[in-house]
Image (cartoon, rainbow, N blue to C red):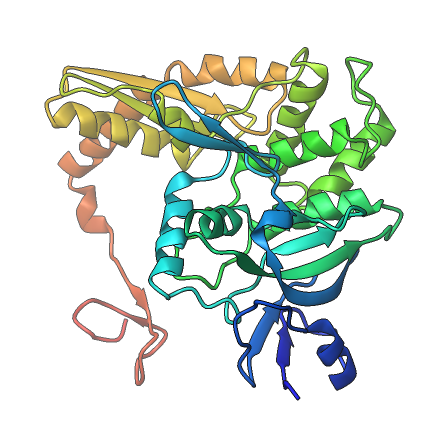
Length: 372
């Protein structure tokens, strides 16, 4: 009798020993299964675990498309990855497998669904599947799942949600995980719309109430926090990608946009995202200015400050641009006032105290440790 100890990631899933035995079974030509293993199995809305097993790599259909580029390099497209899967991550997983460092019973397995033709369709774990193929493995250990309608959403909706959310969770492998990006979320929701997993009217240039509700619920299912600037940016971007950018501001990721710019010794770009709709960002304005003056002080001849806005309407962006045009001059004027106060000796009128956090201290203390 093979004893398997299964630990579910989320609490509230009760499994009997009989269920555990049914979930796990061996196949011909499989490697031997240890007597006791601790398995991390996934848990998600609308998803049911059927069993865990070793399946032949040859009958497992991935969702990535392999392409050989003109320069001889290879790339993969992926419905859950805006930029496809990462070939470096695939190679790292493959090296782990070849060196014997891959622990299939310790790491959360890829999830698959069983198709009518007897083959398996991959839901999550494309990097690991491609790595097993590269490493020459005949079998891969997987978790077979089924998706069903749940909470007025279709099975396909929950499959897309799990596929995206799994990329947002911490992995248990020693290979650095390729975490879900802003663009990955947009790609997934656009796929939901295209394949009618959510009701979204793409035939009009404005978002109706039902479409907005469906879009909001999809983003919440993808674990995005409603009301945040990121949430608003996601909606704007998805609407722009599906029905056009007419009346909808485009959004950008600061780090990704920075990568498109070329900095040299004499020319530097400073990119800053702004959020306040009144045009004054008390935190980001001085931060932006300090970065520009830091570049100038380092000897850079030309510095270009680039600003983009988050979570704003077209009209608010236009108004904020007018105010931001004077951001550097305003910062300089503020600095002059600070210097004038210092020259007038007002620094001596300022005392710095610390809240007493250590044993034996009173409510406030000064740097020399005396009670204040």
